[in-house]
Length: 183
Image (tube, rainbow, N blue to C red; front, side, top):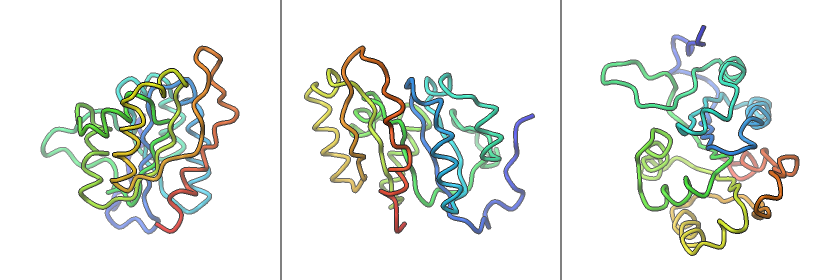
């Protein structure tokens, strides 16, 4: 059974955080960020990239948040399954998502939400998770620069070595909340 949003989700008392999850080996640990956000008095909904959806336990995340995971656009007239975002955390933010987002490419629901959030003034934190070979590509630093110009708060984690393992235990999920502190 898919969890349903509270019937009156437009009047949610807690601020609402969208967690955008990208396709990465550490995405399965997104529950750590959800727990930290809930403990910090956020209500949370998850938006996954189409590929990211395969890296998370959908049932566990939906049970933890109480909302369905979004990964595809809804049809006109369908109810909105999540309240509007008060803030967004992109974690893990992959090389692909960072570059497409900075370029204004909106070919998935997750990227559409991120591109639109800028124009709506929604605060966003991104926690990049990629390897050093990807980070060496000239598009990556340019994309980070564009995102910073847009006001996106970028996490501090350094890229890991290629093919050296995920390093998931050193990924600090809570940094997204620190970056959004005060919003």
